[in-house]
Length: 434
Image (tube, rainbow, N blue to C red; front, side):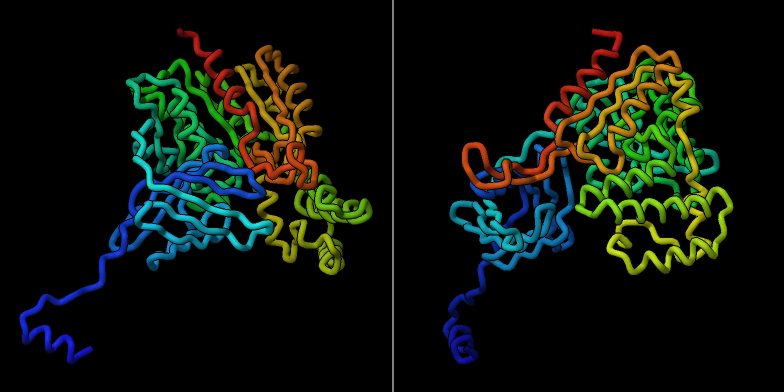
């Protein structure tokens, strides 16, 4: 090789170099396929500081801009780890397509993407700051492209959504913006783990007050949308404000924190196939935890119950308490929404998933309605979506349990059918303008 290079230099011949790798940056569209069933998805590749990254959209699941976990490109092979798993792809530079599989799934999932024109933006985002007491909270205001003022919602996080970059949280804001509503999402306060529900509700109320200061927001039509834990917090925040126009509650508990945890244990273990005896023992242990946290029960008794629980099948399904300090979180989050709901008179839409084991609708939906009726609220809509889980999606599964087309085929996880029409239709019906 050195002799050939020396000869080329002596003869004045041009040096050859490896061709630059085919650039992936841009918009790609395609689908994942399993047992002949497809689900569209889109990938946007970006190169920053010499490193390739990607975000993924799954429109049927309402997910937008989810960061890929791993993007490794060694032409012609590409590793893309994202929501559906770790895909091994091969890039065809001539056709500008990439194909491959996600081998960990059985039956395997096939992947096919094609380079496509980048779609025009249909929403805009603005980074904002707003005060909450002595704190300053960071947020993102997602708006329609049309000129305002816009009706708007503050989106109140669930316990698992701690920053405004959480994919589902961010995607929900985009969902509202694409349907004509501005949506404010925000990072939880620093040290949120030590915050009370009152603290977190104050932050949501502060977000509403901030929207009221903006001329591009319609002050007559400002509401709150609460998700899971946020379903407790949104009504509490609204009770501390004047001028909140509506509440949109997603899988909102109508029971206390203690009762919701007991429901989660009972329904969750039963759905996972545990025996009735195991479910009963796990629930009894969880009651002991709350007896110690709320009602001064003996710590030694709980410690002994914990040691006994460690050897059970269900130990990994409950929150084991191994030290007195482990009870502080439950004490900080002690809350029962009954009093607030019984005085909530603004319009309320509450939606639930029929297969939700975290906030089971059988234990919460009717109670939610009853409390609001006791408040004299005559504008309450409650919808339970069949087959839907806690995140209001259908689980991916083999319909009928066996491959027997046309009845039995793979159904990809997707947002509950009717969700968008229900939420957007209800909101538009509550705008007193054409």
